[in-house]
Length: 149
Image (cartoon, rainbow, N blue to C red; front, top):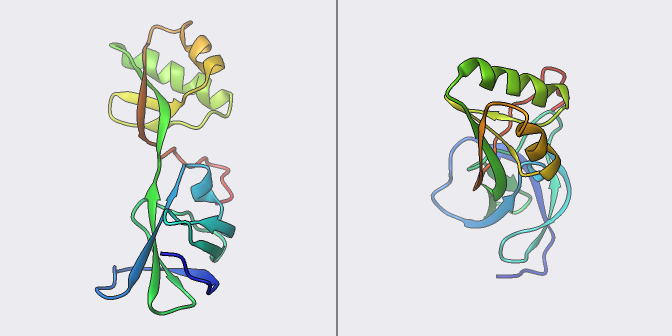
């Protein structure tokens, strides 16, 4: 479905409407931080994001547009990640410290850390007592303490 009409995305809405056309917009973790600019939906429809500053696009968000018949649904893209685990919680904490010290984005789960696949980081991790596995998964990194998002 491709329309000639310009669709401008203007705000988040709290509940998914029952009626209307939903355009899916699949974005990786970096792209979900950018709230303004042109994008192509999954069906190649060009849209323009003009969202209020200070937010972040999350998996499953529904966005309103300048046309009350159209909505945009945000889908988090599957990314190449490194899953980091250890039998030692202390070793995992030390690893998180060193990743943070290098300003590497990290998603923290109960017993694992996740970060984007990167051969330099992977080589650094070999110096720690951790297991690393390359996986494909949606990535939701922690927002930093000094984040301007």
